[in-house]
Image 1 (tube, rainbow, N blue to C red):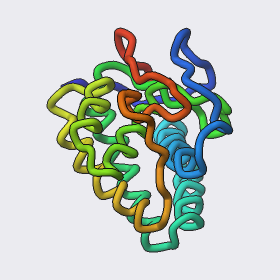
Image 2: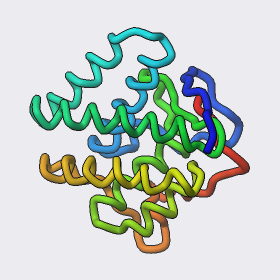
Image 3: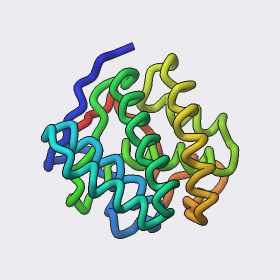
Image 4: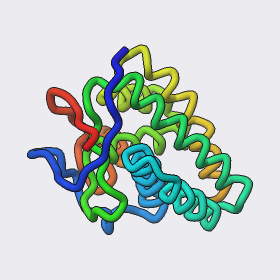
Length: 179
């Protein structure tokens, strides 16, 4: 287990870009924005980003499910913090770029939506220590159900693409970076 500090930043690391936010589905964007806003709250030690995250989730799925999803995003950030192989690349909420780590998280969630827990586990292993993958699935599985219940379906990649939206491969370089 590691204790990787969770931070956010506006730059990007060489080789870590995985695409543009505009190329993602609305559901993918919703999840990435929620994670980014939570990380922003931690970095800035304010509740503003959390309030925006909750409002965004409530707009997408209603107040009750939005609050439940916000709690799951909070748990997800804690799992990433405790079990990360290294820093995980999470961009600022306003950034138009998407990191491979952000896409990997969404891809694991997409795998959970179709109950492919082996695929979700394999994706989780790209960013987390083996010991953290069960905790990751414990968060992503109910979040996937909640999104599906609200008709927020995440795109699935073709077989063999490991749920890579827009064809981006989920190959982790030597580590990860939360910047």
